[in-house]
Length: 277
Image (cartoon, rainbow, N blue to C red; front, top):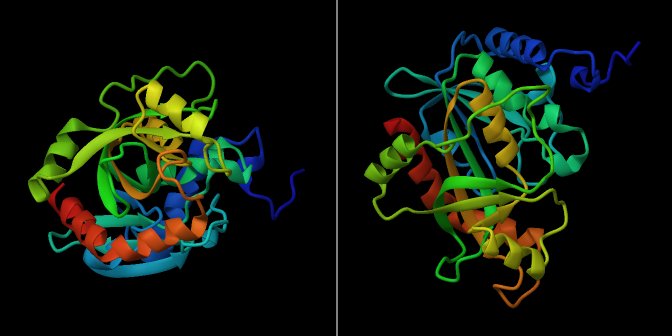
C-alpha cells in the first residue's frame, strides 16, 4: 500500500486524469466556483498579473488540492487563485508550478494543466522566464512563443497516444495578443531538463536547430494541454541573454531581479491580453 501522505500521482497504477478530476472537485469545493473558463500559469516575473485580472474570489494553498506539491522554486507562490473577470468569466491562476528538474516525474509536472482542463478551462496561458538567444532582445522584454523544441527527452503522453502538435501555440491567440500590443515579437522556445543553466555550446545547438529562447518549463505542459483539447497561448519574459550570448555569468538572482523590474509592465500586458481572449 502506498503511504497515505504520498502524492497520489506517484502511484503508477493511478489514473492521472482521475486525480485531475478530484483536484478540480477540490477547487470547486474550496473556492465555491464550479467552472473556470481560462487558466493562467504564472512563471518568473509574471506574478502581479493575478491582481489585475479582476476580483479574486479565493486564494488557496495548492497543497490543499489533490495531486499538487509545494513549489520548490523561489518566486513561485504555491497557490491557486480563482479570479472573476469584469465580463463574468472565471480564471484559474496557477502559481504552483512543478518543474521537471525537481525529479517528481512528468505526471506531477502537468497535473496543473490537467486539473485546469477538468475545471472547464478551454484556454491555457503559459508564461515563463527564459534566456534569450537573439542579440536584439533585451532583459525585461516579453516574447510570444510561436513553437517549441522539447529537449527533455520526456513526454506527458502515456502509451500509444498520438497527439498532433501543429499550431500548438495558437496563431489565433497570438493574433489576439497583438491587438493589445502590436509590437510583440515571437520565437521558438527550447525546454531543457535543468536545473543547471545551459552551456554556451548547448545554446549554440539550440540556435542551430531553430530555437530563440531557452528555459526549463512550458513545453511538457503545452503537450499535455493539447492532449486534453485546450487552446494555448505562450509568453516568455526574457530575463537574461543566454549563456555565450551575454558575457557575464548566469544566476537565479539575475532572473528574479529582471522579473521584478519588468513585472508592472508585463503583468498589465498579460492581464489585458487575457481579458481580450
